[in-house]
Image (cartoon, rainbow, N blue to C red; front, side, top):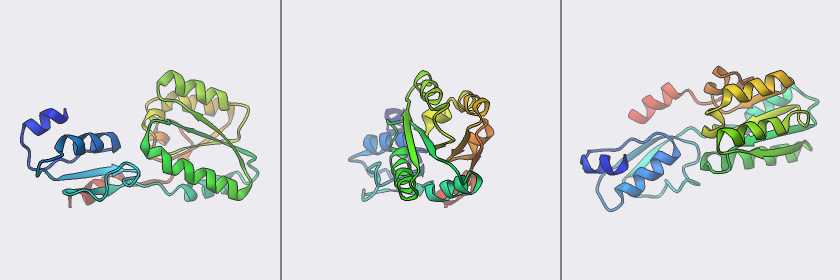
Length: 189
């Protein structure tokens, strides 16, 4: 797709999400084609800052706010599950933030990761009976099978706190994240 876009000699490229932005930046290297990315959770970690003709918007997650909601709803939590893909740059910072937050509160956590649907479901099942709640950032691998993940957690009585409304629409407990319609309009401006 990147080669096709570059072959079409477009005036501007607007990739959405981290991998698409990274791919387009690489494809456009050495050209004058500007890139305005959208919905990048951590542009710094993704290597998308400080580049000529590259700018955009971030959908950075306020991890502390979501975990504050978790503690307000479940003040006696002993252990939190951290479910994410370890191959997505957009999960690195929010997971590090979650660990620091939980450490500061003296709350234990168990990390489980998955990159394919089978791995994600195995990871979700591994948290059952071990945690009282689960946190997942805006993670595409988890979102791809959130309906099945939500079923696992809901049947076990485990609240799933997430980074985007799409997770809640698929069955997760709650989120507080970016309004993507507003972010799209801001990116366009």
